[in-house]
Length: 95
Image (cartoon, rainbow, N blue to C red):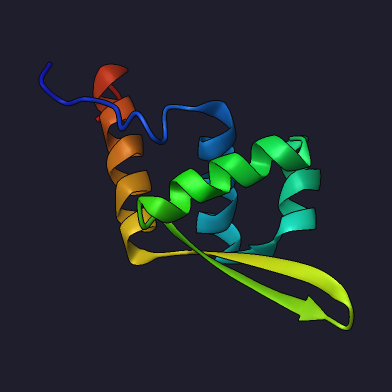
């Protein structure tokens, strides 16, 4: 088998974030933290990695005086997720 699993997505938290964003398209940091059960620090680090890879876009702004971060899946992220799922199916002989 020559297909490899994307190491960026082969991480539980990053896969959870991308899976959620594929479904919802966009979510704020607090909602992602609640959905994944991650700590704020760990989620922040993983979002940075996904953003650097171009899988998500991160928009930071203020709502009043409070910081607000919104994450959105990109076409690159959707493509990577779909390829990852296809490769998992291949590994499991589900195609």
